[in-house]
Image (tube, rainbow, N blue to C red; front, side, top):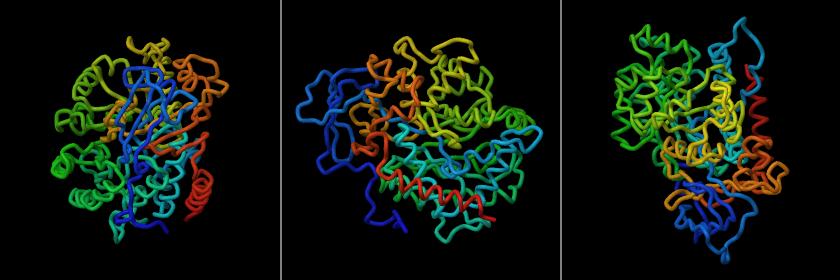
Length: 478
């Protein structure tokens, strides 16, 4: 059994070799656009010390394809990866997010610490192979199967941290505060017992787990699950307690994902969810508003002005029938955004970008909607925006290829049939829109350490086998 990370033997997942390292790329996507002949140097902690365009390689190793910043995955429920494919049938006359949620709760009830670790390890390997280099884990299964806290209250959080360390992915751990089953402090349902925490117990968990997260160069934040799951007093006290522990800790919340949620919030408070949140909490750059699908134009403007990041999960939002976020309107007000894979019906950074752009095309009946004047290549523009927004939501220095940021990047396969012979800007576009997406990922580095080579993680086979075993045991339990 893996050792507890809260020991002196634990090492940061992003640790580099003793003296750091260097790498040379003929083409690299820097925060202000593509650059040629880029020499990267990083220190032993995996932090970039130099990013030099128009350089000579010297003795640095050279990559064979274009180098792009690693993508932060800003929203993940790891255990749900093993649930993918199990709900794609009509069980009710009108299937919806809410019927899906009932099935998901039944699956969550069967998760064990061992199965969660195996599922998350494989998921994080998949993420790395798909171009994600860090993950924000929205962690809400806290207790044993009968709802009783484990002897070590951090048991399941520890399982996720071990999984991230094993795979070598950067992590922002977001323990989820869940207290009620609906607006107006409705008592929790029996099938929510594994999620429920008092505010004091949540703050105790944060104190308990903070040194463990730091030991692997991670970030610890808080996720009030949603306004329907956290009443106003619990939200206020939790935010105050979090700020006392760390004034810069990220805060993520599900909000306005479903029209029923909006209607229930109006019935309870006379306000829509985003409107209520902005009037009752000091929303700022620390916040990630996950989904925020159903907003008025006034809410788009007000929420964007706070500096919060919109956490968009296009494949999950499509899978659950949530609706479409209006990215052009959000961007019109200076709004920042990033992408996540959420329920992991799909685990592919480029796929999220592709579907996000395609959704906007369908809504507006235009093309290349998310391109900008500075970056007319839509894949380039989206990548840079998603990396910046994802890094802000993660609360970690993973904002791209710049001095002071972590040495996280992806090398594309220039010999891939979809990319071969194209200009570098078109190679990234072909990766997002014209390849099988994951297939064009050749190498992935996290903190200056190569985690994926020739498209494959070193632990691909063993992690996959453990995942399949854990999924089978979970499905056939009970």
